[in-house]
Amino acid sequence: MGHAVLSAQTIEQCIIPQHWERYSQEDHEIWSTLFQRQLSALKGYVAQEYLDGLATLGIDEKGIPNFERMNERLRKATGWEVVAVPGLIASRPFFEMLASRRFPAGTFIRSRAQLDYLEEPDIFHDVFGHVPLLTNPAYADYMNEYGRLGLEAIDNKGVKFLARLNWYTIEFGLIRKPEGIRIYGAGIVSSFGEAKYAVGDPSAHHLGFDFERVMRTGYYIDDFQATYFVIDRFEQLFDLLKGVDGPALFGTLREKSTLSPFEILPQDEVLRQGSAEYWREFPKTKEKLK
Ligand code: HBI
Ligand code: FE
Image (tube, rainbow, N blue to C red; front, side, top):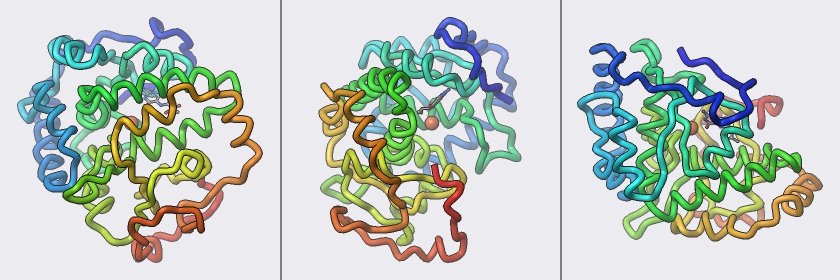
């Protein structure tokens, strides 16, 4: 199991070797099971840019990717590389990595008993979920800018707002395409249940992406989303962050109240009003709202 290294403060202290040669046959077979099952759950729901990323990087059902080999292709695409870390790392080295085009990925893989859900991101969530879109130049630029703003957030009590931006884009974002709404967030891409729920189930709201609304809207870490925010283009995310004055932004946001992911507000661009039937079965209480 991975171990959070929340104490380590520098990038060098967080990075470990992947030791790809140490993975067992069973580890590679768990990857293969997850990969094949997830790809069929995503069919028709996931953005084409994600599938292009899988192909560009040669990520497939054969087994756990070797970071060294994968990085040769990723560096050529957008200058990014994946570095191995033991698990969740402190915010400062995390944001410093993104600001220098390095994505931290866990090296452990979940057990067969955890196929559907595990608390801490494993290599399948990080590499299958997050890495393919780093081949898309616009999305890669956003992730880099997100890292820069994150460093400002640490020094200006803004990490809570960046965590929400992370949640509603990088983890659970949707994108509007001519053929319909499609998935790009890594948390949905790597989740068997949520890949079917986010677009296919009528329960959740689909709202047009709004920068302030997203950073003021709470979320629950242990369940599907009541609301998904929908962008039109990946460039839109980078354009939002480029040149943002962090201290001013976080100062303004701190004065405003937290918004609920269940309600639809007058200023919301409603692309789909959710039926909320899923939420009648699993009502949420306020205190766990992030
Ligand atoms: N560490 N390995 C890892 N992966 C993450 O996604 C991550 C992290 N540490 C901090 C963190 N995310 C959050 O603080 C930010 O997403 C806001
Ligand atoms: Fe993640």
